[in-house]
Image (cartoon, rainbow over all chains, first blue to last red; front, side, top):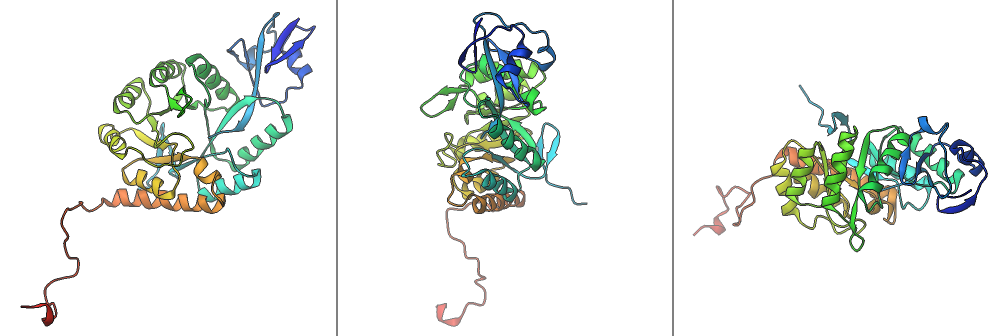
Length: 64
Length: 263
C-alpha cells in the first residue's frame, strides 16, 4: 500500500495507523491528521489507513 | 486598596504585558535566557512535521521548563481548512484551548485574510476554542471578530518581521476607543522598545513580538529593554498623559523673574 507521511512516499504493508506511526518512529508529543482532517489521539487505535492516504505527523516547534 | 494591574486573557490574569515568540534565536540557550529576561507570562509556539525527533523534543522540554502559558499559532496557514485542522492539532498537543489564529491572505506582506479569518474564527469558537486572531488594524474587522466572541484581538503594528513599528497609530487608537472592553494586543511589526511603549501608551493591553528580540544583536539585553518599555508604556497610560498643545507654555514660574527681563 502506498501512502504519504509528512510528504514522504512510503510503501507499507500495515493499514493500522498506530502501527504505521510506530514503524515511522513517531515520538510523543505529536498530533496526527489524515487527508487534512485531525484524528484525535483517542481514535488512533483502530484507525485504518487506505491506499493513497496522506498522513501529517506534527510536533512542537518554535513559533512567533 | 491596591489592585494588581494584570493582563486579562479570556479571564486569566497574566502579570506581564509582553508576549514573546520562541523562533529565530541564535541558540536555544539564548532563547531561554531571553524569555526569562523579558518577564513574559506567555510564549508562542507552533507545530510542524516531525523530522528531527530529538531536536523537537529538546525544544519542547525547554519551553515546558519555563512554566509559562503556551499560546500555539496557526502560522503559515492559507486556508480555513488548514487553520482549523492545525488549531485542533495544537489543542491536543499543547493541552490548551487558546489559539493564535493566523490566516495569511497575501504572501507579499503576510497580511491576514480578513474574510477567511472571520470564517475560521466562527468555526473555532463554536468548537470551544478561545481565539486570539492576528488581524489587520481595520476597525470593522475587529468589531466583527469581537461580535463572534473574540475577547482578545491582535491587530498588527506592521507586517511580520519588518520592525517598522506602529504604521497606523490612528487606526490602532480608533480600535482602542471603539472596543474599550476588549483585550487588545499589538502583534507583529515592532522593532524597537519605543514601539512597544507607544502601543501601551495608546491603551493597548499588551504587545506580542519575536523578531525584534530574537533578531537583535544581543537578544537578552533587548528583552530587558522591551520589558522596561512595556512597563513604562502601561504606567504612562494609567497616569493619563497631559493634553497636547500647539503653543508653548512656560513651566518655570514667571512670577519673581529677575529684573533684567523686566521692562
